[in-house]
Image (cartoon, rainbow, N blue to C red; front, side, top):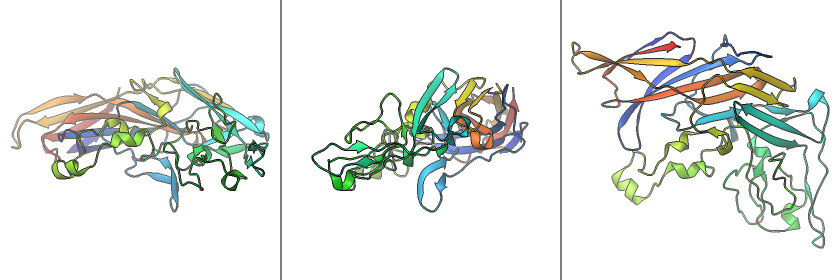
Length: 342
C-alpha cells in the first residue's frame, strides 16, 4: 500500500480483525500542536510519533501508564487525557489546590491535597486525618489517587490497584500512618477510614482496572475451542477507550473546542482553542487482484477520538481514526491511501 501523506502529521494504516472475525483496516493520523498562551493552537514543528506500545512513568517498575499505545483499531468515544502536574497559584506552598480541565462543554475538577496520613494509635478512638503537608506542585498519577490494597486482608481496589487509602478492615496495624490519597473528587472527600470513593485522575486508565477490564470479554473453554486466537464475541470496543471513565466523551470531538486548564501549569491558567483542523482520507481500492483490475475511491470517515494534553511541554496531540472493511488481513486490494488536511 502506498501512503501519500500531504500533512505534517504521523500516519499509519494497520489491518486488524474485528470481534466478529472480519478483517478491517484502521487508518490512524496523529497530530502534535503547540499550547499557546492565548488564541488558537498551531501545528508543532516536532511531531510525536504514533505509539505502538504503552510508555510507563517508571519503565523498570511499571505502574501508571504515561502514554498508552495509539495503535488500536477503533474507539467508540473520545478520550480526553492530561499528563502533567498540579501547581499552586503563584508558586506558593499550599495545603491543597483545585485543578480544572475543560474542553468545550466538558469540565472536570479535582482536589489535590498535600501528603496526609491516618493517625490511629488507639482502638478506643476513631482514625483521624493528619494536616496536609504544604506543596507547590504535584504529579498527577494514579498512585496518588484512591485505591491500592489492604495489607491486612489482601483485598484490592478493582478500579485502581495502584492507589492508596483502600481498607477492608479496621485495624490500627494497617491504618495507622497509612497515606491518604492526594487526588480526590471535591464533592466526595474522604472523611472516614472505610470511605471507598471512585478513584479520580486525568491520566490514562489501566487496562486491567474496572470498568475497562470487563469490556475485554470472556476467555473461557468455549472461547478456547471456538474462537482462539480471535477476540471473544462479547468483546466491546469500549476497551480501547483509555481515558478515565469520567473523561470519555460520546460523539467524539469537533476539533475546534475551547480548552481551559486551571492550576495545571506554572502560569496558573491556560486558555486556548483547538485548531479546527479536520482530516480527509481517501483510499484507492482495486476490484480484483490483477494489476489491471479497475479501481474505486473510498473516503474513510475520520473521528477525532483522542486528545492528550501535556502542559509541561506546552504541547498536546490529537488522534484521528477511521476504519474500512477489507477482504483479508493483507489489505492487498488497498493500493493507495491519500491523507489531506481540510
